[in-house]
Length: 299
Image (tube, rainbow, N blue to C red; front, side):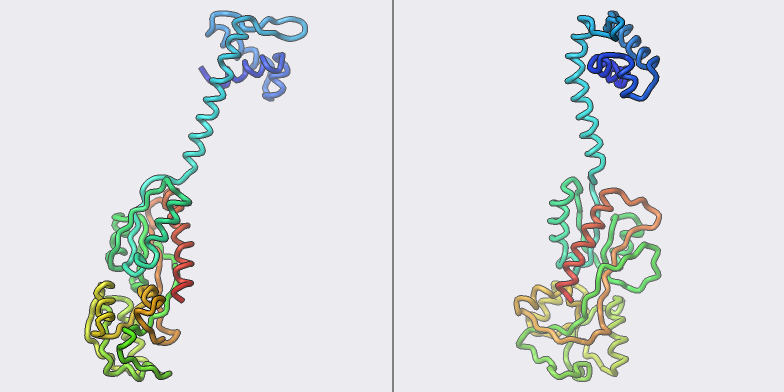
């Protein structure tokens, strides 16, 4: 039986008449009468006494009213709860982050999601920007965060922020300290990204523009090994400031600026042809907020 028939009966019982119930429901009185009749037929007993002053409940009607009131209240509460639950983002979201962004923002993202969207399960993986791009493209992850690697994009890309690219070294490593650092880099052993990386292309273009012959001692993309090379004074490194903010903050590393023209841009990638779920929307919203904090600190 439809719940509206039961609700109509309760309204008749509590308002004292068919006409008053019809007025409250904004329906014809004949419809209210029909609903009451259907309920009486289902119960096999009259529920109302009809008289000149309106209606009053029979004994069966009184008992039914007392039993229906809490049951309908529970039903309405259950429906409201289900609707509220449906409106909350929930479910898994797979997010791939570049190593630098994972280190700078991975835990922040998980902590923020746990507070704001506890029913969304964010699963993080880390990989080279080219891998992240392919993972999003082939639906292996839902959202990717990667360096702007200059590829013609088949994905939807949105900038999350920029970080300066700087020269970084151990405090005891001999670094040029003049105002013209580009000219003084000649002969300084450097760790650089591998030639296939977008940041390496930017660095090579910058060096060519300033007529600097970079002395490449290591071509390594792994961030942990890069930090080890710097820490053991094997070489200085040209890196995004995003990847070494902690070491700069605690004095483990020192930096020299390379100018405003050399920056690392980080983008968020999603697929063009796949729907964005509420859980993904919540993750994207949080990711943008966390990114704003991270890039403000790295700038």
